[in-house]
Structures are given as C-alpha cells and as structure tokens.
Image 1 (cartoon, rainbow, N blue to C red):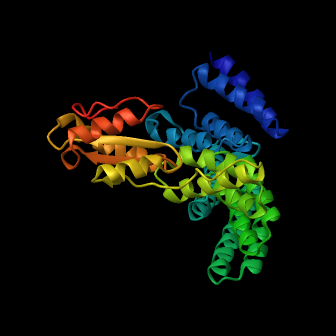
Image 2 (cartoon, helix red, strand yellow):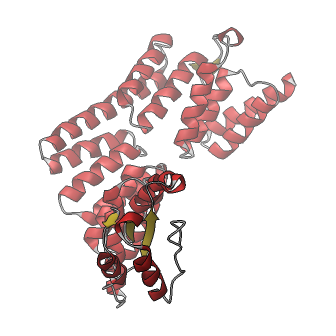
Image 3 (cartoon, rainbow, N blue to C red):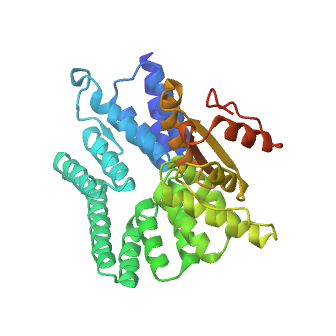
Length: 349
C-alpha cells in the first residue's frame, strides 16, 4: 500500500508541474484511496487541482475536511513540494481558494501564514504579493463603485485581474461597473467569464440576465431567469423579471400576450359576482374553497400561499364558504364546462 501511495503521489506532483490538473486530481484521489486519507499534502493537492478545474465549492470542502482530521494523525514535517514546505503549501492553497470565493482578507492571512512558515521560498513570496495586490485592487474598486465612479472602479478591478485572471468575483464586480455604464455587452462578457470559472455563481447569473434584458436578448434572458427562479423560489423580483422577459419574448415572436399578467398574492373572494369576474379574467385561475372549520383546509392554506408566490403569473383565488351560499357555488361550478367541477362540501375541486 505504501508503494501505491508513493507512486500515485509522485504522478500527482508531476502532473501539477505541467498543469495537467485532471491527472493531478485523479492520482491524488488514487493515493488517498490507497490509504493516505490523512495526508495533508494529498488533500491540498486535491484541492488545488479542483480549484484549477473550476470546482471551487469542492476545493473549499476538501480543505475544510483537512481541518477536521485528527491532528494527531497529521505530521507537519519538513517534507517539501517543489521546494515548498508542505505546511506552507497547504496555506497557499487555502489562500487561493479563499480569494476565488471572495474571501480576500482570509486569503491574505493564509498567504501571510505561509510566508511565516517558509520565509525563504520565492514562490510563496510571489503568491503572497499577488494576493495582496488582488485584495487591494478589489478594495479600491469597491470604494470607487460606492462613490459612483464606475469607470475608475472597472479599471481597479481590471488591475486585480492582471494578477488573478481567473477570479470570478472581480469579473462579476467589473460586470456591475459595465452595467452602470450602459455597456451591457461587456457586462455579459465578464459574467460569462465568471460563470465559466464558477458555474454556480448566482450573482453573476443575475447580472447577466439583467444585461440580456437591456440588450433585448429575450431568449437568453428568459433562460437565465428560469435558472434563477429555481435557485431563488422566494425572490419576487426574480419572478417578476422572468415574467416580463417571457412577455417580451412572446411579443417578439408575434404571440398573443393579452392573457398574461403578473400576480403573486392570493385574492380573497367574498361574493359570487367577484368569483365569476375573477375566473373570467385572462390567464389560469386556481380557486381554493376555504372553510374555517375544516382542519384540512387550515393545513393546506400555507401551501397555497407558498404556491402563489412561486407561480406569480397565475391567479390564486380564495373563497370562504361562509361568504357564498351553497346554491351559488353549485351554479358556479356547473358553469365551468371546461374545468373540473367543484365539491363545496369538501372544499376541493
């Protein structure tokens, strides 16, 4: 087993030297599976490979799992990786993962720890300098953005990207500057890059959707907002933006949009006349017959309210059975020849 671990470790470090991150990850995993599951070096190698492969959350969780290992099983020896002390290397990887995830202060602290452990290593010194420069550029960009100096802020974020071209946060922040400057194509470009590096970056996806809207690229806009709607089901602003994008897309295709409207709240119905008017309005209507003495109705009510928030383009109507007579409800149900009949006695359709 020891020979297998050493073989896979050697292959992983060789792959790292030439930037073959898929092979580096595969060999690190093989070494861990061969019995080196408590190796800080292999877990750091795995995390760095995941970072380079743009799997940021997994890279972060790999380092977190390293901290949870029994410290008695870890030996911070003088072993080196490409001339760098292993403990220093772990901190360097931590710094780079933190920076990619927008934790700039933590990244600087981790890089400084690496320098304290391995003060004479040139690579550690170079990375520490880069981390500091990127963190400084981001801070300057944020201050300029807050001061509404969007052009200057974009330049500041660009300076940071010179030292860390694959930083999704800086790309996303610069996209916000382009959006403020009405340069929506450039905003899309930066959002695309941020999402290429971190596909789950919700803020970048939202900014791209907003930019597509300004560019009237409605199919792309709808696609992004549909993803955001699934990720943020309680966000009414996203729901409304999706609705307006869908209306715009249908309009460009020559489709009828007169039956589309945006809702989001349950409408209380207190008379049969109101019920007729509401269900005759354009769009899909969901009628919920409510009895305050029916326990099942009481239990279902929160779910109906939640569904209303999730489907704002539909009409949700709540009818209290005490407000409308049984004869009126039966007559109403019979009039709905193209819909399921309702049973007022159970409160169900």
